[in-house]
Length: 190
Image (cartoon, rainbow, N blue to C red; front, top):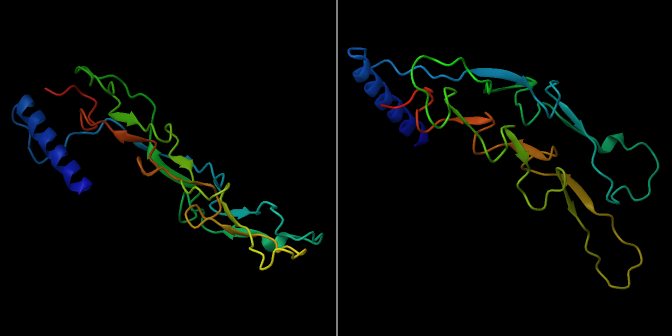
């Protein structure tokens, strides 16, 4: 639905710019002012995979031996995906001004920075029971007088996979959205 609406807006903007220029083809979409770039994933630090160690909430039961068998290996990284180590995002640097009047909302950039993730593309896990990527479930004792308590179970959050961060749902991890006033062209609409 959103893709077809956006495509319809692009074709409308192309028709308006073609009418203003006088004779340009209506099939050519307007040139988007912003460009995409690649940035290193801040979660996996460009490695494409993660090794996570669960926090100690008492689930180890006082054991002193090596706890490496509790570690969780994520391959690929759930934020950058496919083990790339980088993400494709909108380039937030200001483009060179053109001779045409700028859009009053975005000022030649064609982008509106995402307010939900503060232009980072990553937000904290939205689940309320997620504590830094882990879900802690306390064991219920069967009797009140039981002196031996069972340790809690600590499992990775199913939404963030134990990372504690997810891709921003509003901008889809792109750090910004195309300006709705100029449809990403950066030029003032006529």
